[in-house]
Length: 392
Image 1 (cartoon, one colour):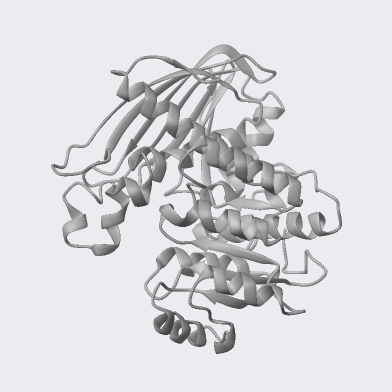
Image 2 (cartoon, rainbow, N blue to C red):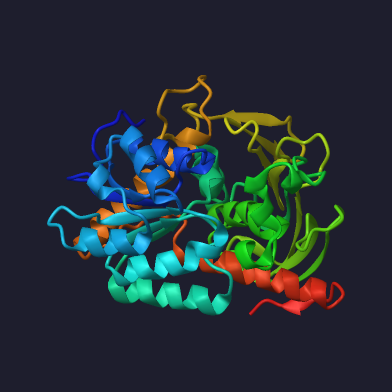
């Protein structure tokens, strides 16, 4: 169990790009990063409007002189300071992720970036290479993967408790955009603009979340080929609001050759708050996790009564319990999951600064690149009339 003791020798001096007033995701970033004193918010370019950004920064107790009009100015000015930022989080609309991430890496900064990391595999490959050359950490905020029962599932699959994995059923299908919300909520409008959101909405915005969760659960999972169909049901949208993807997997230590994966990504599932669920079916048993009930996971062994595994319980693996924050029985949620990821980001950054790399997982730059590749392959399949396309 975690009791708040420091995980890095000194808090990482941290800045933000975006995430200003009215940004829900910006608040989640700050709450997660600052919770365990692993990061210290010292600078920011919080808003496209410099004065509004400076005023917001002051409300966060950031020195007004370190509230900058844009990220380029922030990187240049902070580089002149002996106490300048060491890491930056990017909480802007999608269209800025690549340019800001690239500039941050070139400035020698660690990065935490909202997904998608960028728009194309060429851009993603460039960021992977740059991060490796600069020996910098890039974390991608697949926030749901910070829930502890994801770690429990990872260990159970590794231990062979499910047998060989045969079928994975995953969905992230909410209903909040089942009408033309972008006409009423300006902050939603960019999500359907390809120049700002990229080549996909439903697949990129929500589909990549369950994709990374199963990658975290099954690290040796490899996609062989996939087929995708997508469309926009709400008139006037340039990007899809609903998509289905079928994937075949290659065989590996924990995965049976030809294992099948089904994914439903949607924003028009009327009445659903999230409908973000993962079911992993093996030759011996199955696991099922629902992000709206993240403290429980269904464990079903063929021929035996169903079990519900509870976060924080003594029967879980040590790896799943190490990040408990308030003990079993109390409900933990998204802020705790994000805090766990930010703690992992901090340890990775501190290790990288020492020239060492910890042997633990977190959503890194390669995970971000994998998400971009998956989106591209899905779009390619759909554009070819839902044809099967090879993944490699």
